Amino acid sequence: MINYSNYLRERIPSEFEDNAGDEENVDKLNSENKICEIFNQKNFIEELNKKQEVQLEYLNRRLSVIEKSNTELSDETTAFKLENEELKAKLASIESERSKLDEEYKLKYETLINDHMVERETFLSSKSGLVSVFFI
Image (cartoon, rainbow, N blue to C red; front, side, top):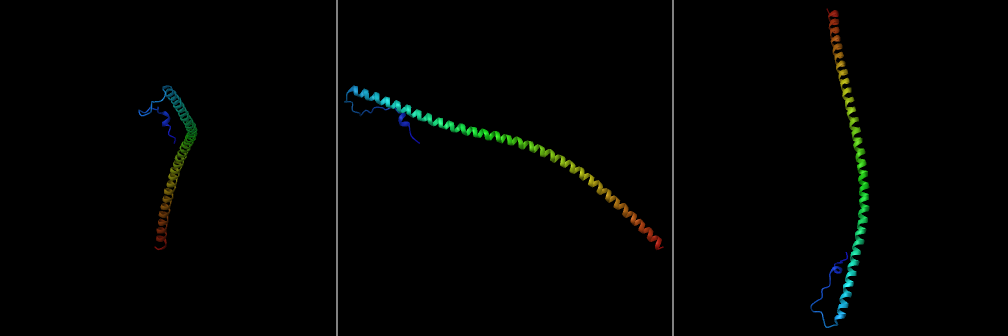
């Protein structure tokens, strides 16, 4: 990092400077020094402007990349939300189908159990009848 603060300071003449020289030469030197200081300040400000322009270009490129990424992510989010809704609907239909099948199988199971109970009762009554016929 370059320190440009020296360019922005005005030169304050020291009390100990020798004022014995010609007043015209001193004025000329002072005016030349002021002109040099002004040019230095101008150069410093131009350097700062260049740095800020470069930084601005970098930030603009970065912003465009982030905006593009943001739009892609929002599109993906929308797609995932739609897919999520579709999957929820499919899950609901599958669960309703499953509950229907469960009810059907429970009904079939109960019917089968009842049939077995009737067959068992029939078998037992037939057996007792046969036993009473053959062993009496």
